[in-house]
Image (cartoon, rainbow, N blue to C red; front, top):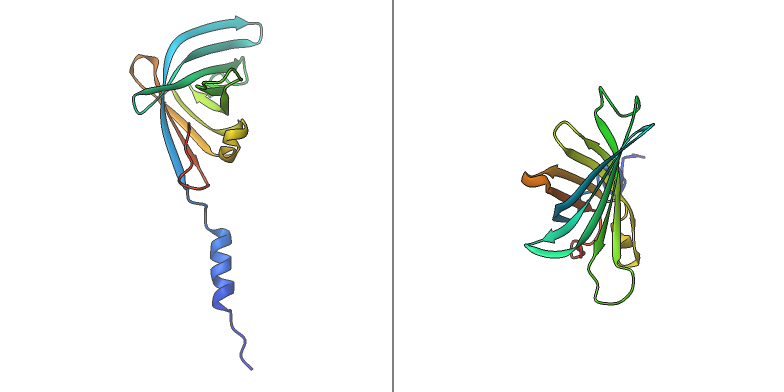
Amino acid sequence: MKFGISPLVVASAIALTAPLAHAGSVTLTLNRTTLANVNDAAGLWQHQGGDIIKGGVKVGQYALHRRVTTAGTTAPLNTAMTTITLFFATTSGNAPQNVTLQGAHDFGPGNFRGSVSAGSNKYTWIQGGDATYTSLAGGALSLVINWNGASQLTLP
C-alpha cells in the first residue's frame, strides 16, 4: 500500500501560506490648505487639513494629525504617530461617509506607512487595507490605499 501527498493537500497548503494579493487600489491626492504646529509639555501636535482629489476632481476633505512624543518618537526615529480621516462629499444633510487611517509618518523623506483602521458603513470593506503616502510639491501628499477584496470596489 502506497501513501502519498494528495495534490489537493499540496494546493491547499500553498493557498494557505501564500501572501494575499491586493485586489484593489486607489490613489488620492491630499492638497493641504492648512498646517498648524502646537507644542506642549509632552512634544508636538501637527494638525493639517485640506481637499481630497481623485482624477482631478475634488471628492472630499481630510483632517490629519501627527503626534511627536519627546524621547519616544524623536531622534533617532524622527517619526510621528499619524491619524488621517478622509471625509467624502455627500449631497445629504447627514455626516459624510469616511475612512480613517493610522500609522507612522517619517519626517526625513516625508512618507507615511499604515493601514485603514475604520470605515463608515459604506466603506467597512476597506478596513485592514494598506496605506502609504509620499510627499509632493507644495505640501500635497500622494495617498495610495490597497485592499484585499473585490477589485470593482473603490473610494469614493
